Image (cartoon, rainbow, N blue to C red):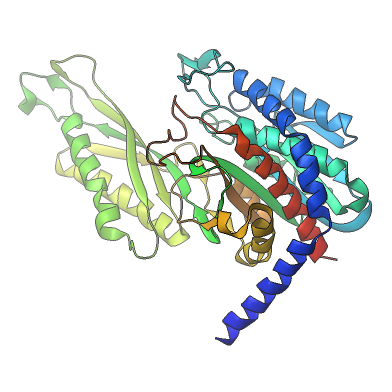
Amino acid sequence: MKYTYLIGLSLISLSSFAQKSPLKAEVSKKADAIEQKVIAWRRDFHEHPELGNAEVRTAGIVAKHLTSLGFVVTTGVAKTGVVGILKGGKPGPVVALRADMDALPVTERVDLPFASKVKTQYNGQEVGVMHACGHDSHVAILMGVAEVLSSMKKEIQGTVKFIFQPAEEGVPAGDEGGAALMIKEGVLENPKVDVIFGLHINSQTEVGNVAYRPGGTMAAVNDMKITITGRQAHGAYPWSGIDPIVVSAQIINNLQTIVSRNLNLTENPGVVTVGAINGGVRSNIIPEKVVMLGTVRNFSNQDEAMFIDRIKTIATKTAEAYGATAEVKIPFSSHYPVTFNNIALTEKMLPSMQATAGADHVLLRPPVTGAEDFSFFQEKVPGLFVFLGGMPKGKDPLKAPSHHTPDFYLDESGFVLGVKLLSNLTLDYMGMKK
Protein backbone atom coordinates (compact mmCIF):
# COMPACT_ATOMS: atom_id res chain seq x y z
CA MET A 1 0.00 0.00 0.00
CA LYS A 2 2.77 2.39 0.90
CA TYR A 3 4.45 1.77 -2.47
CA THR A 4 1.20 2.41 -4.33
CA TYR A 5 0.64 5.60 -2.35
CA LEU A 6 4.08 6.94 -3.20
CA ILE A 7 3.53 6.21 -6.88
CA GLY A 8 0.20 8.00 -6.65
CA LEU A 9 1.88 11.08 -5.17
CA SER A 10 4.51 10.95 -7.90
CA LEU A 11 1.89 10.79 -10.64
CA ILE A 12 -0.11 13.62 -9.08
CA SER A 13 3.01 15.78 -8.94
CA LEU A 14 4.02 14.98 -12.49
CA SER A 15 0.46 15.39 -13.74
CA SER A 16 0.30 18.82 -12.15
CA PHE A 17 3.54 19.76 -13.90
CA ALA A 18 2.34 18.42 -17.25
CA GLN A 19 -1.03 20.16 -17.05
CA LYS A 20 0.50 23.51 -16.04
CA SER A 21 3.37 23.50 -18.54
CA PRO A 22 3.19 26.96 -20.15
CA LEU A 23 4.50 25.56 -23.41
CA LYS A 24 1.57 23.20 -24.02
CA ALA A 25 -0.72 25.89 -25.39
CA GLU A 26 2.05 27.13 -27.64
CA VAL A 27 2.73 23.62 -28.95
CA SER A 28 -0.97 23.07 -29.62
CA LYS A 29 -1.32 26.34 -31.51
CA LYS A 30 1.77 25.77 -33.63
CA ALA A 31 0.85 22.15 -34.40
CA ASP A 32 -2.66 23.13 -35.49
CA ALA A 33 -1.17 25.78 -37.77
CA ILE A 34 0.92 23.25 -39.71
CA GLU A 35 -1.57 20.36 -39.75
CA GLN A 36 -2.28 20.68 -43.48
CA LYS A 37 1.44 20.86 -44.21
CA VAL A 38 1.98 17.60 -42.33
CA ILE A 39 -0.85 15.96 -44.29
CA ALA A 40 0.61 17.22 -47.58
CA TRP A 41 4.02 15.78 -46.70
CA ARG A 42 2.46 12.45 -45.86
CA ARG A 43 0.52 12.32 -49.14
CA ASP A 44 3.68 13.04 -51.09
CA PHE A 45 5.60 10.27 -49.32
CA HIS A 46 2.66 7.92 -49.77
CA GLU A 47 2.59 8.52 -53.51
CA HIS A 48 6.36 8.00 -53.79
CA PRO A 49 7.18 5.08 -51.45
CA GLU A 50 10.65 3.54 -51.23
CA LEU A 51 11.77 0.20 -49.84
CA GLY A 52 14.31 -0.21 -47.04
CA ASN A 53 17.83 1.10 -47.71
CA ALA A 54 16.49 2.82 -50.84
CA GLU A 55 14.74 5.82 -49.23
CA VAL A 56 16.79 8.30 -51.26
CA ARG A 57 13.99 10.69 -52.27
CA THR A 58 12.39 10.60 -48.83
CA ALA A 59 15.71 11.26 -47.10
CA GLY A 60 16.44 14.16 -49.43
CA ILE A 61 13.15 15.88 -48.57
CA VAL A 62 13.73 15.33 -44.85
CA ALA A 63 17.29 16.67 -44.98
CA LYS A 64 16.23 19.74 -46.93
CA HIS A 65 13.50 20.50 -44.40
CA LEU A 66 15.76 20.10 -41.36
CA THR A 67 18.45 22.23 -43.00
CA SER A 68 15.92 24.98 -43.69
CA LEU A 69 15.11 25.00 -39.95
CA GLY A 70 18.75 25.58 -39.06
CA PHE A 71 19.49 22.07 -37.75
CA VAL A 72 22.89 20.42 -37.86
CA VAL A 73 22.09 17.69 -40.39
CA THR A 74 23.90 14.44 -41.17
CA THR A 75 22.85 12.29 -44.13
CA GLY A 76 23.80 8.82 -45.27
CA VAL A 77 23.55 7.37 -41.78
CA ALA A 78 23.02 3.60 -42.03
CA LYS A 79 22.94 4.09 -45.82
CA THR A 80 19.97 6.45 -46.25
CA GLY A 81 19.18 7.70 -42.73
CA VAL A 82 19.04 11.37 -41.73
CA VAL A 83 19.88 12.82 -38.32
CA GLY A 84 19.13 16.40 -37.32
CA ILE A 85 20.24 18.10 -34.11
CA LEU A 86 18.40 21.02 -32.53
CA LYS A 87 20.25 22.61 -29.63
CA GLY A 88 17.93 24.47 -27.29
CA GLY A 89 18.52 27.83 -25.72
CA LYS A 90 18.99 26.34 -22.26
CA PRO A 91 21.13 23.45 -20.95
CA GLY A 92 19.52 20.09 -20.35
CA PRO A 93 19.28 16.45 -21.43
CA VAL A 94 19.46 15.03 -24.95
CA VAL A 95 16.12 13.67 -26.14
CA ALA A 96 15.98 11.57 -29.32
CA LEU A 97 12.87 11.26 -31.48
CA ARG A 98 12.68 8.59 -34.16
CA ALA A 99 10.61 8.01 -37.30
CA ASP A 100 11.03 5.14 -39.77
CA MET A 101 10.94 5.88 -43.51
CA ASP A 102 10.62 2.63 -45.48
CA ALA A 103 7.65 1.20 -47.36
CA LEU A 104 6.68 -2.40 -48.14
CA PRO A 105 6.48 -4.65 -51.22
CA VAL A 106 2.67 -4.41 -51.31
CA THR A 107 0.48 -3.37 -54.25
CA GLU A 108 -1.97 -0.68 -53.13
CA ARG A 109 -5.71 -1.24 -53.59
CA VAL A 110 -7.05 1.87 -51.83
CA ASP A 111 -8.82 4.37 -54.09
CA LEU A 112 -6.95 7.56 -53.22
CA PRO A 113 -5.80 10.41 -55.46
CA PHE A 114 -2.31 9.96 -54.01
CA ALA A 115 -2.28 6.15 -54.11
CA SER A 116 1.05 4.55 -54.96
CA LYS A 117 1.60 3.34 -58.52
CA VAL A 118 5.26 2.52 -57.87
CA LYS A 119 6.64 -0.86 -58.89
CA THR A 120 10.08 -2.34 -58.33
CA GLN A 121 12.02 -5.60 -58.19
CA TYR A 122 11.99 -7.43 -54.87
CA ASN A 123 13.42 -10.92 -54.33
CA GLY A 124 13.51 -11.42 -58.08
CA GLN A 125 9.87 -10.46 -58.62
CA GLU A 126 8.14 -7.31 -59.83
CA VAL A 127 6.09 -5.96 -56.94
CA GLY A 128 4.11 -2.88 -56.04
CA VAL A 129 5.48 -0.59 -53.36
CA MET A 130 3.18 0.89 -50.72
CA HIS A 131 3.35 2.61 -47.36
CA ALA A 132 1.17 -0.16 -45.93
CA CYS A 133 2.35 0.36 -42.36
CA GLY A 134 2.12 4.13 -41.93
CA HIS A 135 5.79 5.04 -42.00
CA ASP A 136 4.93 7.89 -44.36
CA SER A 137 2.86 9.43 -41.57
CA HIS A 138 5.68 8.90 -39.05
CA VAL A 139 8.08 10.89 -41.24
CA ALA A 140 5.57 13.68 -41.82
CA ILE A 141 4.70 13.89 -38.12
CA LEU A 142 8.34 14.10 -37.06
CA MET A 143 9.01 16.77 -39.69
CA GLY A 144 6.12 18.67 -38.10
CA VAL A 145 7.63 18.22 -34.63
CA ALA A 146 10.92 19.59 -35.97
CA GLU A 147 9.14 22.69 -37.25
CA VAL A 148 7.25 23.23 -33.99
CA LEU A 149 10.25 22.78 -31.72
CA SER A 150 12.63 24.80 -33.88
CA SER A 151 10.28 27.75 -33.53
CA MET A 152 10.55 27.35 -29.72
CA LYS A 153 14.32 26.95 -29.64
CA LYS A 154 14.91 29.55 -26.92
CA GLU A 155 12.58 27.76 -24.51
CA ILE A 156 14.03 24.27 -25.06
CA GLN A 157 15.98 23.03 -22.04
CA GLY A 158 18.36 20.64 -23.75
CA THR A 159 19.04 19.14 -27.16
CA VAL A 160 16.71 17.26 -29.47
CA LYS A 161 18.11 14.64 -31.85
CA PHE A 162 15.78 13.81 -34.75
CA ILE A 163 16.41 10.31 -36.14
CA PHE A 164 14.87 9.46 -39.52
CA GLN A 165 15.60 5.75 -39.85
CA PRO A 166 15.70 3.54 -42.94
CA ALA A 167 14.86 -0.15 -43.23
CA GLU A 168 12.71 -0.75 -40.14
CA GLU A 169 10.94 -3.55 -42.02
CA GLY A 170 14.23 -5.40 -42.37
CA VAL A 171 16.84 -5.99 -45.04
CA PRO A 172 17.74 -8.95 -47.28
CA ALA A 173 19.69 -11.80 -45.69
CA GLY A 174 23.33 -10.88 -45.32
CA ASP A 175 22.75 -7.13 -45.54
CA GLU A 176 22.73 -4.54 -42.74
CA GLY A 177 20.38 -1.70 -42.00
CA GLY A 178 17.80 -0.16 -39.73
CA ALA A 179 18.15 0.81 -36.09
CA ALA A 180 20.94 -1.70 -35.41
CA LEU A 181 23.17 -0.19 -38.09
CA MET A 182 22.38 3.37 -36.99
CA ILE A 183 23.46 2.48 -33.46
CA LYS A 184 26.58 0.76 -34.79
CA GLU A 185 27.44 3.99 -36.64
CA GLY A 186 27.03 6.04 -33.43
CA VAL A 187 23.59 7.66 -33.75
CA LEU A 188 23.12 7.62 -29.96
CA GLU A 189 26.43 9.43 -29.37
CA ASN A 190 27.79 12.95 -30.04
CA PRO A 191 25.76 14.16 -28.25
CA LYS A 192 24.97 11.15 -26.08
CA VAL A 193 21.24 10.44 -25.97
CA ASP A 194 19.58 10.27 -22.52
CA VAL A 195 16.15 9.06 -23.59
CA ILE A 196 14.29 8.22 -26.80
CA PHE A 197 10.62 8.52 -27.80
CA GLY A 198 8.81 7.04 -30.78
CA LEU A 199 5.31 6.37 -32.00
CA HIS A 200 3.54 4.11 -34.47
CA ILE A 201 0.27 4.97 -36.17
CA ASN A 202 -2.35 2.22 -35.82
CA SER A 203 -5.11 1.64 -38.34
CA GLN A 204 -7.26 -0.22 -35.80
CA THR A 205 -7.06 2.36 -32.99
CA GLU A 206 -9.56 5.20 -33.23
CA VAL A 207 -8.34 8.68 -34.13
CA GLY A 208 -7.75 10.84 -31.05
CA ASN A 209 -6.53 7.94 -28.90
CA VAL A 210 -3.03 7.08 -27.72
CA ALA A 211 -2.28 3.52 -26.59
CA TYR A 212 0.67 2.48 -24.47
CA ARG A 213 2.01 -0.34 -22.33
CA PRO A 214 4.83 -0.34 -19.76
CA GLY A 215 7.38 -3.14 -20.09
CA GLY A 216 7.16 -5.54 -23.03
CA THR A 217 4.83 -3.88 -25.51
CA MET A 218 5.85 -5.53 -28.81
CA ALA A 219 7.32 -8.98 -29.32
CA ALA A 220 10.84 -10.12 -30.00
CA VAL A 221 11.02 -11.73 -33.42
CA ASN A 222 13.21 -14.36 -35.01
CA ASP A 223 12.71 -15.58 -38.56
CA MET A 224 13.43 -19.22 -39.30
CA LYS A 225 14.31 -21.42 -42.24
CA ILE A 226 13.74 -25.18 -42.05
CA THR A 227 15.08 -27.35 -44.87
CA ILE A 228 13.68 -30.91 -45.02
CA THR A 229 15.69 -33.39 -47.09
CA GLY A 230 14.16 -36.71 -48.07
CA ARG A 231 14.68 -38.95 -51.12
CA GLN A 232 13.16 -38.15 -54.48
CA ALA A 233 10.78 -40.66 -56.04
CA HIS A 234 8.08 -41.09 -58.66
CA GLY A 235 4.72 -39.93 -57.29
CA ALA A 236 3.22 -43.29 -58.23
CA TYR A 237 5.72 -45.16 -56.07
CA PRO A 238 6.04 -43.22 -52.80
CA TRP A 239 7.41 -46.25 -50.95
CA SER A 240 10.62 -45.97 -52.96
CA GLY A 241 11.43 -42.54 -51.56
CA ILE A 242 11.15 -40.41 -48.42
CA ASP A 243 8.53 -37.70 -48.90
CA PRO A 244 9.68 -34.34 -47.46
CA ILE A 245 6.26 -32.80 -48.11
CA VAL A 246 4.57 -35.25 -45.72
CA VAL A 247 7.37 -34.66 -43.20
CA SER A 248 6.90 -30.89 -43.52
CA ALA A 249 3.18 -31.23 -42.84
CA GLN A 250 3.89 -33.15 -39.64
CA ILE A 251 6.48 -30.60 -38.53
CA ILE A 252 4.06 -27.71 -39.10
CA ASN A 253 1.40 -29.39 -36.98
CA ASN A 254 3.87 -30.32 -34.24
CA LEU A 255 5.29 -26.79 -34.05
CA GLN A 256 1.88 -25.53 -32.92
CA THR A 257 2.21 -27.54 -29.71
CA ILE A 258 4.93 -25.17 -28.53
CA VAL A 259 2.38 -22.42 -27.88
CA SER A 260 -0.42 -24.73 -26.76
CA ARG A 261 1.66 -27.01 -24.52
CA ASN A 262 5.07 -25.49 -23.69
CA LEU A 263 4.37 -21.77 -23.24
CA ASN A 264 2.91 -20.40 -19.99
CA LEU A 265 0.16 -18.32 -21.59
CA THR A 266 -0.79 -16.76 -18.25
CA GLU A 267 2.50 -14.85 -18.30
CA ASN A 268 3.26 -14.00 -21.93
CA PRO A 269 1.82 -14.69 -25.38
CA GLY A 270 3.80 -16.22 -28.21
CA VAL A 271 3.48 -17.14 -31.87
CA VAL A 272 5.02 -19.71 -34.23
CA THR A 273 3.95 -19.16 -37.83
CA VAL A 274 5.07 -20.93 -40.99
CA GLY A 275 4.48 -18.38 -43.73
CA ALA A 276 5.99 -20.11 -46.76
CA ILE A 277 6.54 -23.71 -47.87
CA ASN A 278 8.26 -24.50 -51.14
CA GLY A 279 9.06 -27.85 -52.71
CA GLY A 280 8.48 -29.79 -55.86
CA VAL A 281 8.02 -28.93 -59.54
CA ARG A 282 5.22 -31.17 -60.82
CA SER A 283 2.37 -33.38 -59.67
CA ASN A 284 3.93 -36.79 -60.11
CA ILE A 285 7.39 -36.20 -58.64
CA ILE A 286 8.07 -36.43 -54.93
CA PRO A 287 10.83 -33.83 -54.44
CA GLU A 288 14.06 -34.29 -52.58
CA LYS A 289 13.75 -31.08 -50.54
CA VAL A 290 11.18 -28.77 -49.02
CA VAL A 291 12.05 -25.36 -47.58
CA MET A 292 9.85 -23.67 -44.98
CA LEU A 293 10.10 -20.06 -43.82
CA GLY A 294 8.46 -18.74 -40.69
CA THR A 295 8.41 -16.26 -37.85
CA VAL A 296 8.64 -16.73 -34.08
CA ARG A 297 7.38 -14.12 -31.56
CA ASN A 298 7.83 -13.96 -27.79
CA PHE A 299 8.12 -11.50 -24.88
CA SER A 300 11.00 -12.73 -22.72
CA ASN A 301 14.53 -14.06 -23.15
CA GLN A 302 13.51 -17.28 -21.41
CA ASP A 303 10.59 -17.86 -23.79
CA GLU A 304 12.81 -17.07 -26.77
CA ALA A 305 15.37 -19.68 -25.72
CA MET A 306 12.62 -22.24 -25.12
CA PHE A 307 11.01 -21.57 -28.52
CA ILE A 308 14.30 -21.96 -30.39
CA ASP A 309 15.18 -25.18 -28.55
CA ARG A 310 11.73 -26.72 -29.12
CA ILE A 311 11.61 -25.74 -32.81
CA LYS A 312 14.99 -27.36 -33.44
CA THR A 313 14.05 -30.50 -31.49
CA ILE A 314 10.62 -30.90 -33.09
CA ALA A 315 11.87 -30.34 -36.63
CA THR A 316 14.91 -32.61 -36.43
CA LYS A 317 13.27 -35.42 -34.46
CA THR A 318 10.08 -35.43 -36.56
CA ALA A 319 12.17 -35.61 -39.71
CA GLU A 320 14.28 -38.39 -38.19
CA ALA A 321 11.14 -40.39 -37.37
CA TYR A 322 10.28 -40.45 -41.09
CA GLY A 323 13.82 -41.16 -42.27
CA ALA A 324 14.44 -37.60 -43.42
CA THR A 325 16.71 -34.86 -42.09
CA ALA A 326 15.91 -31.29 -41.06
CA GLU A 327 18.26 -28.31 -40.96
CA VAL A 328 16.99 -25.44 -38.83
CA LYS A 329 18.36 -21.90 -39.04
CA ILE A 330 16.91 -19.53 -36.42
CA PRO A 331 17.30 -16.65 -36.72
CA PHE A 332 17.69 -17.02 -40.47
CA SER A 333 18.16 -13.40 -41.52
CA SER A 334 16.81 -11.12 -38.78
CA HIS A 335 16.20 -10.80 -35.07
CA TYR A 336 14.52 -7.94 -33.19
CA PRO A 337 14.48 -7.86 -29.38
CA VAL A 338 11.36 -7.13 -27.30
CA THR A 339 10.17 -3.53 -27.64
CA PHE A 340 10.44 -2.79 -23.93
CA ASN A 341 9.07 0.47 -22.57
CA ASN A 342 11.18 1.54 -19.60
CA ILE A 343 8.74 1.23 -16.69
CA ALA A 344 9.95 4.25 -14.72
CA LEU A 345 10.00 6.42 -17.85
CA THR A 346 6.51 5.29 -18.86
CA GLU A 347 5.21 6.20 -15.40
CA LYS A 348 6.84 9.63 -15.58
CA MET A 349 5.49 10.43 -19.04
CA LEU A 350 1.94 9.14 -18.57
CA PRO A 351 0.69 12.52 -17.26
CA SER A 352 2.22 14.22 -20.31
CA MET A 353 0.34 11.84 -22.62
CA GLN A 354 -2.88 12.38 -20.68
CA ALA A 355 -2.50 16.16 -20.73
CA THR A 356 -1.95 16.07 -24.51
CA ALA A 357 -4.67 13.65 -25.62
CA GLY A 358 -7.01 13.80 -22.62
CA ALA A 359 -7.01 11.18 -19.86
CA ASP A 360 -9.95 9.30 -21.41
CA HIS A 361 -8.05 8.95 -24.67
CA VAL A 362 -4.84 7.41 -23.28
CA LEU A 363 -5.42 3.67 -23.25
CA LEU A 364 -3.49 0.85 -21.63
CA ARG A 365 -3.21 -1.85 -24.29
CA PRO A 366 -2.31 -5.56 -24.19
CA PRO A 367 0.98 -6.80 -25.67
CA VAL A 368 1.31 -6.70 -29.46
CA THR A 369 2.82 -9.69 -31.25
CA GLY A 370 4.12 -7.46 -34.01
CA ALA A 371 7.76 -6.41 -33.71
CA GLU A 372 9.71 -3.15 -34.02
CA ASP A 373 13.41 -2.43 -34.39
CA PHE A 374 12.91 0.60 -32.14
CA SER A 375 13.70 -2.10 -29.60
CA PHE A 376 17.41 -1.83 -30.46
CA PHE A 377 17.41 1.80 -29.28
CA GLN A 378 15.65 0.76 -26.07
CA GLU A 379 18.41 -1.75 -25.33
CA LYS A 380 20.87 1.16 -25.16
CA VAL A 381 18.87 4.01 -23.57
CA PRO A 382 15.51 4.30 -21.75
CA GLY A 383 12.76 4.49 -24.34
CA LEU A 384 9.02 4.90 -24.67
CA PHE A 385 7.14 3.71 -27.77
CA VAL A 386 3.41 4.43 -28.08
CA PHE A 387 0.62 3.91 -30.58
CA LEU A 388 -1.31 6.74 -32.26
CA GLY A 389 -4.88 6.28 -33.46
CA GLY A 390 -5.35 6.31 -37.23
CA MET A 391 -8.76 4.63 -37.62
CA PRO A 392 -11.81 6.76 -38.54
CA LYS A 393 -14.10 7.44 -35.58
CA GLY A 394 -16.88 4.91 -35.11
CA LYS A 395 -15.34 2.22 -37.33
CA ASP A 396 -15.18 -1.35 -36.08
CA PRO A 397 -11.50 -2.23 -35.40
CA LEU A 398 -12.16 -5.80 -36.52
CA LYS A 399 -13.27 -4.53 -39.93
CA ALA A 400 -10.58 -1.89 -40.38
CA PRO A 401 -7.85 -3.09 -42.79
CA SER A 402 -4.76 -4.10 -40.87
CA HIS A 403 -1.16 -3.11 -41.45
CA HIS A 404 0.87 -4.72 -44.26
CA THR A 405 -2.22 -5.18 -46.45
CA PRO A 406 -3.22 -3.64 -49.83
CA ASP A 407 -6.26 -1.97 -48.22
CA PHE A 408 -4.39 -0.29 -45.34
CA TYR A 409 -5.93 3.13 -44.68
CA LEU A 410 -5.31 6.01 -42.28
CA ASP A 411 -7.51 8.88 -41.14
CA GLU A 412 -5.23 11.89 -41.55
CA SER A 413 -7.02 13.90 -38.87
CA GLY A 414 -5.04 11.95 -36.27
CA PHE A 415 -1.63 13.19 -37.38
CA VAL A 416 -1.76 16.52 -35.55
CA LEU A 417 -2.10 14.69 -32.21
CA GLY A 418 1.14 12.89 -33.05
CA VAL A 419 2.92 16.20 -33.55
CA LYS A 420 1.64 17.51 -30.22
CA LEU A 421 2.44 14.27 -28.40
CA LEU A 422 6.09 14.00 -29.43
CA SER A 423 6.61 17.72 -28.87
CA ASN A 424 5.11 17.62 -25.38
CA LEU A 425 6.91 14.43 -24.36
CA THR A 426 10.17 16.14 -25.28
CA LEU A 427 9.47 19.41 -23.50
CA ASP A 428 7.93 17.79 -20.43
CA TYR A 429 10.80 15.36 -20.00
CA MET A 430 13.27 18.25 -20.20
CA GLY A 431 11.19 20.21 -17.69
CA MET A 432 11.29 17.31 -15.25
CA LYS A 433 15.08 17.11 -15.47
CA LYS A 434 15.74 20.75 -14.50
